[in-house]
Image 1 (cartoon, rainbow, N blue to C red):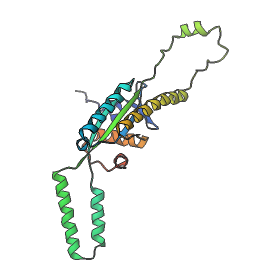
Image 2: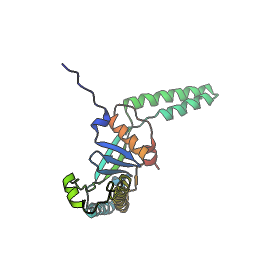
Image 3: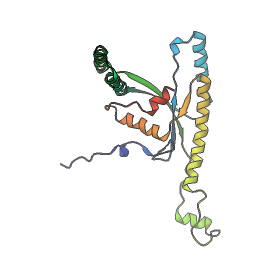
Image 4: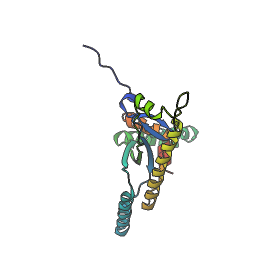
Amino acid sequence: MAKEKSLATQEIINIDRIEGGVIVLKNGSFRKILLVSGINFDLKSEEERNLIIFSYQEFLNSLSFSIQEIIHSRKINIDGYLNQLKKLHKKESSSLLKNIIVDYQDFVKEFVERNPIMSKTFFVVVPYDPIFIPKLGKRVVKGLFGLFRKKGAMKEDKSKDGQFEENKRQLDLRVDQVTAGLNRVGLRAVPLSEDEVIELFYNFYNPALVEKKGIIVQRNNE
């Protein structure tokens, strides 16, 4: 029996490349991910809750395109905090305080092992699907342009780089619209950079690994 061929992650996911924070899918569609702050809804008064709900409803009705909302739960790694305790232990001269630090360090480790500390991060995915004009056959092209074409290859109207920048500009217009709409609701939204997008997808496809405190968590706490 033939062995099953293992597939790389790149072959499974529908992403062609990530460029300047823009996710380009294999079908040519564009996506941008926004990191969105949260609101403690339970602490709001009834009047404030109704205002938030109404503002959010208005925001959704103002969009002419769909958006995707993602809530990402991730385990917080406390290695950095434990390292600080180790440094504090080395600097401390009192044997009594040294023992207290060691006991506290053991307590934190045991507590986190039994009760993993989770944080929730909120994202909004903004799409843009360019309209592609199907290529004409060689015979049709010759019939349409044969009388007007000069010698040499016919130049394309737009280069690939120019088309990418135009699609990116259209996507950025949508991002600005979504950002402004969320701001009216009381939510702060910022686009992820290229490194942040890569880190996010790494966490998505490696859930079993202990996640380090990365740039996304830092920006979310700003």
